[in-house]
Length: 438
Image (cartoon, rainbow, N blue to C red):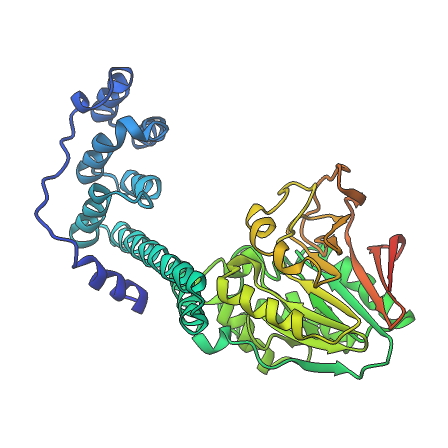
């Protein structure tokens, strides 16, 4: 049993046992669902039972009690697993009691562990709600000390809820550092959504190297989804060699990395990616968020998979303190997009107000395409998520200034007079460029 599962079990023990189990009878179902309920109880074929469970779960308001009874009695671990996946995040006391019973008595270890994890999720969500209420009260009362402490606690609990084994010190950003002196021009490579070891990734990386030999980059930034499908297993995962070292070390520059949702795909991956910076000549990730200056530009690496209140406070303060001519905030999820994923509503509500009037550029990936969208509040929105993972179709929308589905990367050229963002495809063809001036 892992530490996470042991903690879950301790949390579970606070749930009082002995509550009556739901009756597994179709009589508790609405009339329209009883035929399906009766069929589920009589069906011997596992796959057909799974299909009936899915059908009943489409109307949880009427079927919850019945399905919880099935969870207690169905002989198939696959069916019980499907039920926990469907019901396990519902914030209801009968659900918690059913999860407790599976965690403590289920004969299948996988089912018991999943029930423990769902119980932990529920506990963490309850904790987050409490913290958010306390944090809001502290903010409204002007108690900045308590507000910051609650914000930091919220971030830790959010990471536990996702199962990440990430020490608190890896969340703590270092002081701003410099990678190139002020007053010097800077050229930066930027790309995201790439780590699959595919031919497309290799060809795009080769194009970056060829471009670099003709017009050298000072350094690079990544926009997340560094490794599919679930991040890295450890700092010694063999994919580091073939999916990173062999492709990007030849450029001889440093890459300042940010997380994507796939990098959070399994518990050890975030820590593995931070730690790998200690043994790589190119990979750099001093924390899950950080900021640094290069010439006239200041870069702010963010973790958009966990845009916590603490991170928003940190970013607002760092932007306000910055003396840089240009401010570029980067991370994985776009604020606005006309790609497959569309706008990220939580970032529109939470991150955009922090950037307005403070940042010049927000640079993201997630959608596997290249986009430039109309500015808002002085912020230009760019997406460069076509670094090697499968590209997706993109059509221009109301905010589009440029939109194309093509493997490639972005290039940022900055000095005191201007900041130019270019899109280059895997054939090193210039597709688009836009220059900001002050």
